[in-house]
Structures are given as structure tokens and as C-alpha cells.
Image 1 (cartoon, one colour):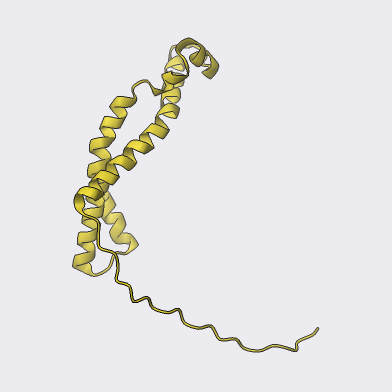
Image 2 (cartoon, one colour):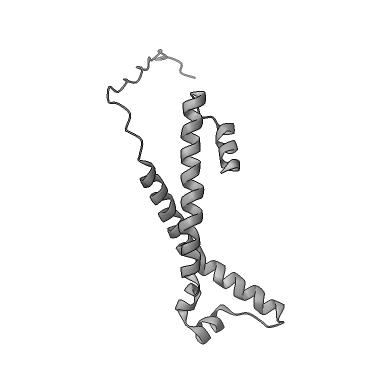
Length: 127
């Protein structure tokens, strides 16, 4: 065992930045980006949801489901059938849900001076 060269090292404290915090986003931007995020999420999830629904419907009818058969009969783009209704739902649902979450979370921070995990959970449950 070689224990020579054991010295203490000091770690310098990080320098505090003198740049001010960025200004908060305007509320219309918060609501718009919330809605766009919800719409994009639905566009990505919708094909899997469509396949799952068709699989459940065929099992309820006592038929065997096959993804290849679905594509052969209806075409590959059939997984996007009904997408418009889902996207319109997200325009209103995601915009209001996530936009109100951001707004209420910021208001809670103004009132309490902090935003902890429990506060975020409470705001998420209310909005």
C-alpha cells in the first residue's frame, strides 16, 4: 500500500453570474406552447391508440386481429383515421390544462415565495 501524495484539495466556489434572470413568458405564449405540445404529443400517440382500439374491437367481435391485415385492408395511413378530432381536443384541453398549471404555479410562487414538490402536485391536482 502506497499512501504517499495524500494532500487536501480545495474546490473553488462557483462564481455567481451577474446576468439577470430571464423575463417570464407572456401568458398567450405559455398557452400556445402548451396547446402545441399537446397536439404534437397526440400526433405521436394516435397511431398506437388507433391500433389498440381496433385490436380491442376485433377481439370483442371474436375475430383475430393482425396489424398486417389492417394495413392490407385499409392502408398504412389508416392509423391516422380520426386524428383531426384528437388534435382539436388537445387544442382546448392541453392549452387550458397546462397553461393554467403554469399560471397557478407562478401565482403560488408569488404568494409563498417558493415552489416545492407538494405545491406543484397540489396545483396539478386542481388544474
